[in-house]
Amino acid sequence: MRTISEGICQINGVGCQFEYTHEFAPTVNWAECVDIAVKAARNVVGENKVDENCQPWTASEDFGAFLQKIPGCFVFIGNGDDSDGVGNVPLHNSSYDFNDKILKIGAEYFAELIRVRLPR
Image 1: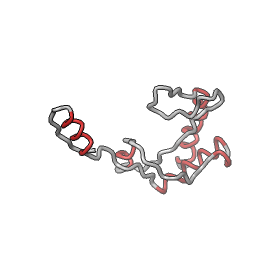
Image 2 (image 1 turned 180 degrees about the horizontal axis):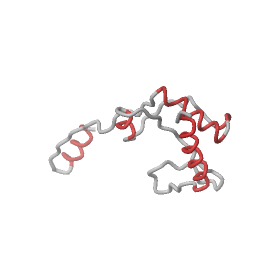
Image 3 (image 1 turned 90 degrees about the vertical axis):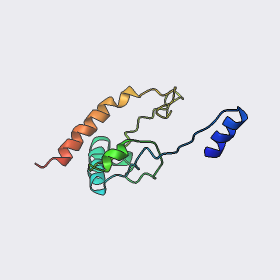
Image 4 (image 1 turned 30 degrees about the horizontal axis):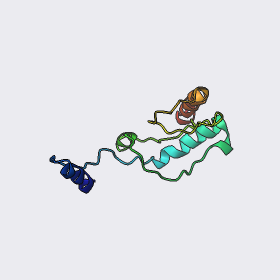
């Protein structure tokens, strides 16, 4: 990145100051929270619609900073809807359109998460 930035600036006759920083902490779920999140999700949408072993991926997600201090679990709720042929557009894309059909599922998931987590 430094070489590219400096090259572009040199070609255009301007100076360049380059500094690269790591702004985000990795988002790593707490193991003891994963089972609770999975159980709540399965209770809401069923066993066959929950993937408890997703492949790791790299993203710029500030939730990782929270997980450095507070136990938690980052989950995907399955917002993709390709019924109109334009679904599954990633967040922060100008074509992204939140799938309002999942609002009830999201609310049910969080209510179930509380039921599963709180002692009786």
